[in-house]
Image (cartoon, rainbow, N blue to C red; front, side):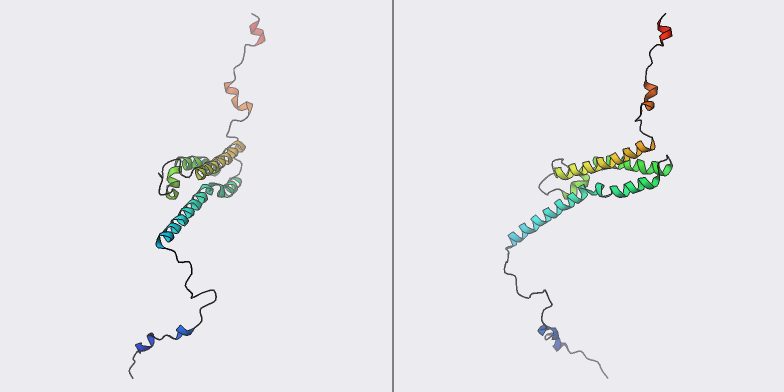
Length: 171
């Protein structure tokens, strides 16, 4: 018994006579665009996508703030190595982010402008700085609640000058 393939049936597939699936139309679209218009539309949608991603990056520090607050809560109020590590991370990360702001937003800069300029994406960069300052404020609040910041008058007694006592000043 030999096996043979009949390639004549490939030109006449069985599924040619089937109806299209629901939601699919085999009718060509009526708004045929010229290649120049299609390229301009694609460039505009790409620019809008880049701007949306820049906004996502700008508010990303605020999105991570609830998790960082939970970590601070779980670390406790005492001065231990674990709580100090978390507070140190919370205090240093905003400074690193603000110093590297141009490098962070460089992929989202419009192609017609300088990527490392402060004038590109100014609103997104301001929102990014504000979110990082909010993270820094949470870190400073935790330092204050742990007693690491000198906020009371008793913390500054070493710098207070005393006048002469009244008994000695009469001489």
